[in-house]
Image 1 (cartoon, rainbow, N blue to C red):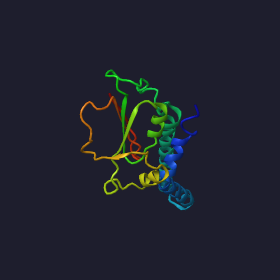
Image 2: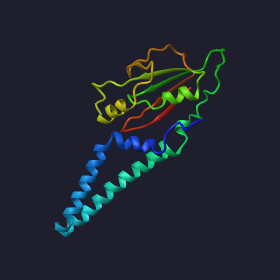
Image 3: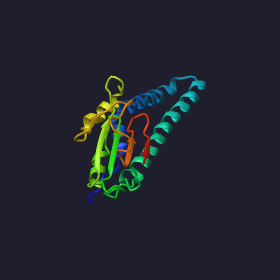
Image 4: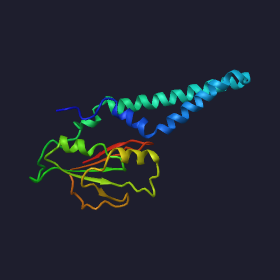
Amino acid sequence: MAPIRKPLQGVRNIIRFNWHFYLYALIAIALLILCIPHTMPGLKALSYVFIIGVTGSVAVSLAVSFYVYDFTDLYSFDWLNAGESLNKTGQRHTIINIHAGFDETSSILAIKYPDARLIVCDFYDPEIHTEISVKRARAAYPAFKGTIPVSTKHLPFPDNSADSILLICNSPKLRMLFEFI
């Protein structure tokens, strides 16, 4: 089987969809470096602290993102016990995958678990979720075929209708992974 994701895809996506933050940081650092020779000694030290702080926070953020999204086996979904195509009742394993506007997991799940029934839900609302990075991500990754728009207040499924419910938030501000079985 071919690799599920390209090398460094997680970090590349983070930079690609949030490039404006990295540009602002780069401009601020460049301006400070240019101004340091012309500032008072007390401000020079503060400028160096700021440069180190901004550079360090960007580096740590990208390093953690690399570890989680590019180094670990998160996207292999080996941790998900959906390998069984039948559940206890003899029905197909049902996976509900819920995302917040940026879905890079449903196609992987469909390939990894072809016998499972995959239901994809998107609770993105452009009136509420106004981050430009999510809009960029949605333009780069079209919606999975058959994705159901849902509300964060109500999911249109009866109790016990799924074997696995995944909420993999790919928010630029916060990415969390939950598995409910």
